[in-house]
Length: 312
Image 1: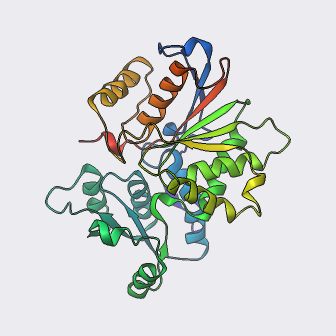
Image 2 (image 1 turned 60 degrees about the vertical axis):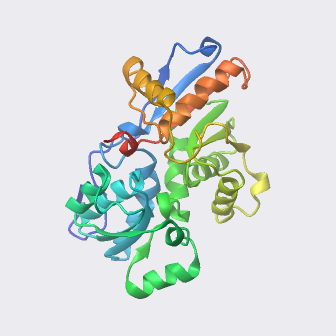
């Protein structure tokens, strides 16, 4: 990744548009559906998936306004912080990462990368981390770092929606359902926003798969993001979030889910992990097995990239 002499643009060998790959898994009832995967995990080995999508216009804003310091948030396995730290390292921008949990004595592979990339890591407890969206707390951070730009957890800012919407404009065919994992709401909101921008095309139902315990909370996040772009969220394409596949919480897993991820890696040659993409693929498998979606439906799974959850 490099910057032009005026410091305005990022250039890199990104794989865009990412491919739409048909798959035929040996899952119960799968023969009655058409299943495709949008391989955003193939965009870049580090800045992959929805992380590039959601950061794309924030980084342009940084460069256009000569902002040299970023503050953002995440956990010990955050794909967002990992991608953002790499971009900041390449562009010579300082990053302050507010990390939930005290990993000082046992840093994760992701946090070791951040340290190697000279990120200023501040570890906070859960109570402080819960203030990450509150005006008083953000004001205190900007008082300490007055020239910094705050990028929300997961990169799910207003600028993220346009980046994610690019997925819809890249599609080469129409689908009945588009499925995506939901953690901070930005990807789902961006897909709805992108679909709304193509009113003459056949509109897919956007189905989010909640990866954490967040019923109502996740819906509120998505609606808040959409309201920044649309006067009435009631006029938007249909969408909802299924909360049955979070496996008891964010980054929570089971031996069965981990074995399933390994089988997808092995049998379909698609790398997935148990935090985001694994729960998405598991949900698709279960929904087809239950016949919860009409038979014959054409479904697209958005592989949002990011495999930090699989690193040991």
